[in-house]
Length: 525
Image 1 (tube, helix red, strand yellow):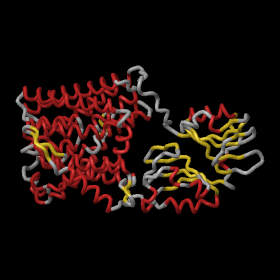
Image 2 (cartoon, rainbow, N blue to C red):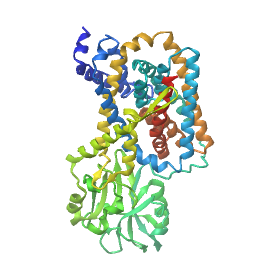
Image 3 (cartoon, one colour):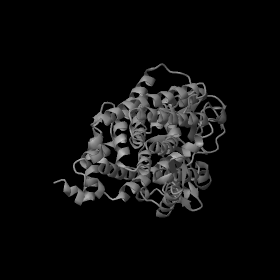
Image 4 (cartoon, one colour):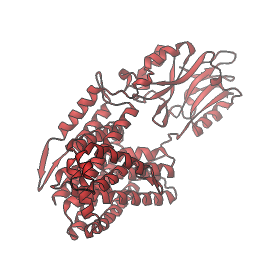
């Protein structure tokens, strides 16, 4: 009866995606499997009949992987290059830890006589790196062998990393001598302040550091206006202050008292609302480069990107699909809306030109190869689009071409790509998994990969501590080093600090690249 799946491979692919996604929603302790549920269901279905795997078109896996890594690169590229100088030592330490881990896995595995392809897949598994699995399969004579190792290593990685993060979170806070508090608020608040002392706005705590801003101003007996160009505040002035809770409170204490009225309640002259940035010509520009003050007498107070609210400042770079909280004269609202786009229908629109050209460049980067001993190294379909995405995401735009994608479109393409890749890998490797995972070889792989995971994560935490990283950033660095969103989500539940996410962004893309190189060496040993 299972021949039906072999005769109808696309039915098998999407059935696996459906059931695997349902499995991924099931909570297992503190985490969910997420997209990895598709891999495990694919392995189970592929194990039913040896003809199912060969029937799946190879292009499904390659195209899905390319979409996934390219969109990851577009998002991670700016953070990677922004953090490059300040976090270079941490990046070097992470790369060294990954190389040492690869050596440990190979030495321990060879002690059991395990083939390099299994070890390479297992190494990719304890790094939860899907592109690493693809690289191992591309270098192996039998692509099913790395998938077996990956399927064994992946759940080990999630379990062991969660235990590491729980241990770090349970420790007392350490300062992080080279990583002071980022001072970025986890949430923004708005307060109306009654000024009781003469003051220069630039002298207010937090203003020069872009931690607070004024959005609206009302002089005594006057009408409210957009807070553009305010410099001197006089007793009796009312001013609307935006920022993190503690920063806003410091500004209130400096200026005077909480006002008895809330300026934003009066919209007779000043309006405010969220406007969606959907004009591609404005993507990649800074808040200052929008020219809202000069054009419309307006300002941006907040930017919401995904689920994150950010305080606006002149140098903040804007993305398509950002929601801008604009404070503006009531009569200019329609003009501001037209200028920024504000069209929900364009939120998921993708430029076929920039997406097609970007992926084409990524595939071209993956073509060249170099032989190092018995190993042949190439970026391939896993790392080529990733590198292209990182560079293009960092550039953001080239003339009229906007490389970045709207946030929702990026996440949608990424999810589709990952699901297609994992379903294809599971189906094509299921029968080999059935024959090898529940054998002496499987037990040996579990022992080797457990040892490799403990060594790997311990090295990363030690390097972070020696390099003066804070507790919160160390948790983020470890999450990015392993590279699993479920692990990052758990880290965020244990530390409410923006350094968790910035640490994740610092290492996520770099770790993928290093793992891809390592697995190609490991297959050849």
